[in-house]
Length: 233
Image (cartoon, rainbow, N blue to C red; front, side, top):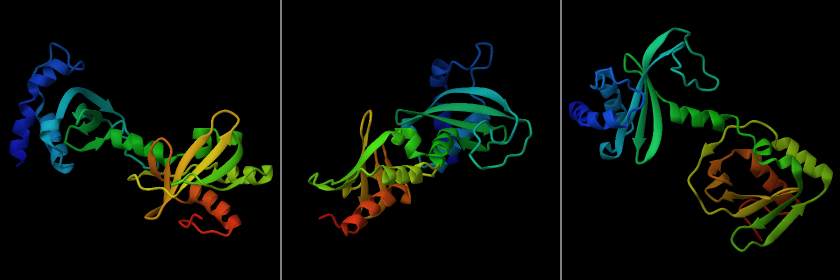
């Protein structure tokens, strides 16, 4: 199976010649064997459709650690000179970057970079929630007002509790029970929150699993109303 994958990758060599801007003209046009092997391994490991996966360019690179230029937050790496390649690929039309050493050990830089962004997510900083003058909760299904918070001390307490770095994960979309609105001096921020099968669901620009951070705001409002999450009235 791996030999067939390598053959498919090698057949794309002509495409690499035309697309790559990282390969000097005086360098051999043949894609290095290690690059072909790594690409075959990526296709196999991620169970990708090789018909929609192609190498756009590659570049020789020397890194100062085994992080291969894409360290993951909180991880320690050996500080040793490491030779390898940067591989820019297209997967179903999306550009991705993989870095590999000369032994074929690769990392998904695109995946790590996204993980790093999500590991220090801060709702207050990202959406300027310190400008919030009012927090309102609606039912998502019929946009019915549940309750709101305007008391300055309560608002400051809520915003302060949200002003922390948390780890979020992308989530499948689901039918949110509520719409939480942070009414600000500038523009309002609307969040779809709480699903029956995922109480930690938050959707603003993308669907996330945000832990108890935003859920705690919803719970505070519902508790004041004598309701419980998942039971809008």
